[in-house]
Image (cartoon, rainbow, N blue to C red; front, side, top):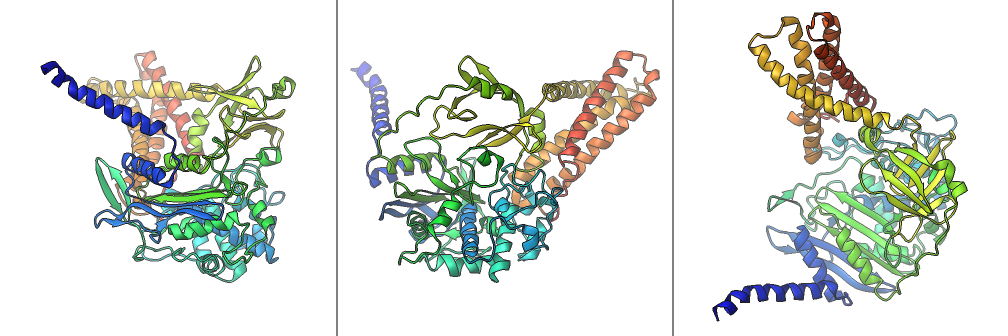
Length: 623
């Protein structure tokens, strides 16, 4: 009997495990089962509340919310609770501009400089490749994404119109030929919003309210920059160390890129608007169906022109490449909220969701799509296409990513983004510098898909200057050349020298304190330690600013260190190199002298790379 009693907890645990396993394996076939499954994900991933709308053909399957809009007061999410939907705002701005296109006030190929010469665009290719409207809508102008100090506005005033565009003057420089590479840029949509304002004669938020939100019967939606006082707004939270932290709903500088707040009732209308070919609930066409097809088409990037059909359109992109069918739409993230808007016109299905816990919505997105597609048969495996060895052969070799979202991120790509395209028998593989290789399955002579994808996502082509290009759904890479190995090798050697420099510097510091080093050798031996400390401080300060982005733009320890530390790193490196060269012959140990020269050489190479990618002028304490 005692043995049986001892076994009871184990048997109970096994029974619970069995029930849970059955729950996971059972298909979700009803809305009640779906919401139950979503709530389990919400608890697991710490989402206080969720906006949710599900549309199938002309039927609204669900319109409302789950969980809490306000944790402290246990206020539930309802169909009219507002959530900040971030970059989903871009779809509204793009539709607004398409309305003006249909009215003949502009065209997608119009040059931005001719429409609005006051916009401070710096384009070295202006004479041959001006920035066009389509480029700002498809993120192909080459602009940087916004700096950390240009995201949230912690001041009491909001720059509007041309003044708002001026905030992003540093980001509005074309880093490559416009219309070639796609790289997500929120400042581009500040430009798009300004064009909407200038050509319509109304502030963008007023235009959207009058020509989209109200005609569509969206009862709660607003693009106001400061929604904090709105009693319908859900509270945003972050989760850390077992606790929810309430976040202040700060306004953003790039309003047209992400200021919209909407409820489930609003997003139902927005989903239906796309499913009904841009018609309002009363049947009025706010745009022609041709404009919807334009919105879903990627026009300008090199990948689209080379035959890749899955690129970013006019604030409209493919939301999933796996599953029974693909959805289009847009995602959004803003302080305290993460959102998705997605639809499939052919199947008449769509959904929108947003959580106020700042958590990724991927698991819920997948669950919702699976539910909406539950009656759809499993699609047949795409017909195998043999590898065109002759067509692929000229493209084999090493590639480097050359389209980072912002210049600062380009440093990481420069150091570590190398990947090799290799052929092994009948397979084409893309091998990164570290990690497992991707298998590329042919869909045409030079287009490919990954094994679980439904559609092509990679194409091989040449850029304007004749260089080999490997373009994927998540990057743009150019041939790295025969010396591809030099950058990662130098980086590896530099890391080794930095680590040994720290250890040696600590030993030499002890010797210096004991006065056992010649005076002229003290600084040459210790400056690598100081330079490395400045470099580490730079990285730590950047992480600090990025993790507390609301503090960017103001004077604080992290922003000051981020501005000063890179300069200190350069000064220590240059001073140490000069002193080592000057007193080289006075070192008794030539090994130490040459070691120091190599260390300063490595530090100098890193300093040059840092300067090239903009790390030496990080004045984050102001806007």
